[in-house]
Image 1 (cartoon, one colour):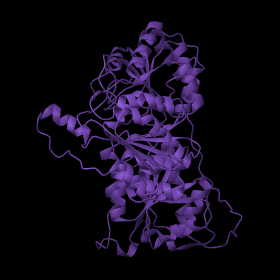
Image 2: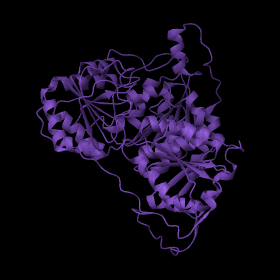
Image 3: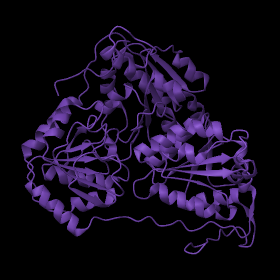
Image 4: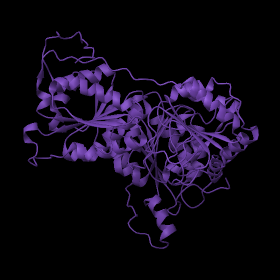
Length: 557
């Protein structure tokens, strides 16, 4: 183990033998992991046994997809990869959705998968599958622990890989016989230090020259690694430099939307963006992407923002970037934002260019009535802006219900949004469970559609079991609204395969031991929300929405 420092736990002699499964747990403890999310399986019993006396909390989910999404949210909102543990075959299949989401979203995640014994490989034994074939195309690394003595090294490498460069998921296969093998003197290793890349002087000089020549510069932020300090510093610098700051799809918590002396945020691109911002993206003559790239959704299917001079600053490769790339700066997001804020560039942006963008954003993000019968969610957003905590964590899965939250709910705290950038349904409730466990003193709100909610809503039981508290606001319009909207556009008058039959979510929540309310009129929402907050329980507000309402009412911006 040359190059690694062996750590003594102080609780057992160096010569004491320990199982590989227990050594895995010790390495996770050494890395600072506080929670693992799991659905148990007989294939990794020795790891579960190691967790019995561990400082790590084992959060038992009700479905492997839920466990994966909880770990994904932990990786998104925290400083370390989220950790999930599932069993072979069926369990691994259920967890694949979280791995795909972590890969496309560039979120650090480590998934442990129990496997069949080595001796049974290649016999199509019970729940056997090819872990490399399944995960190889949607993970940064897939490795199987075939050598018990390497357990600590494999875990440390996985943690390092998940966080380094462009973050992402790593999958570790655990043959059930190997993890029971004893390792003489088995000890955790010192975690490998992450390389934090700072932008070079020459790169910043070149960037300054580009800004000086631009007349309509635009910064687009996204990805992971933002801190409150770097976020605030960037938007204040941009405001002083007359440069609008937009955000990548579902990454708009990277910078504060409202900040004294730094109101340069002009909205998020991608699905649900304003037409005005899309036009501004096209009109820009210089685009600086920080932590993200000109990807599919951000560019309206590779059709917008293609002509401008383009700089990409991010810690790893530019996977997903399309079109022009004039300068690439390899740098940690936090370090780059701080360095940029320290520059005294002469920029060509005008005060009017920024003011117009900010005005368009404020008009677009001001809640307005949607009309129709039942609960008007647009007006509920106005109430929610007044009632929710300033540092609230917002979660949601995929679907049209998320358009209201993305458009109307302001974020002022870095890392306050956990939502799938790859469009995976079912993330909202599991992410809310994880967020409430990570931040027990912060308010957590899950914005849900009826379709998204029942994909993983049973994880409310997990929250109750471990003391998590959040409020799920469920829009019920009786259909998969995103797909129905596409049908209405392309196959008018022929809805097919998109209808839903829903329970009374109030009674459903109460049956789990949570707080539930049925809201049928807009004017009932404020007090219902207040009662949900006061309940101190996981709460579900069941909002009956006009079944013909698909998305927030359009506007002129």
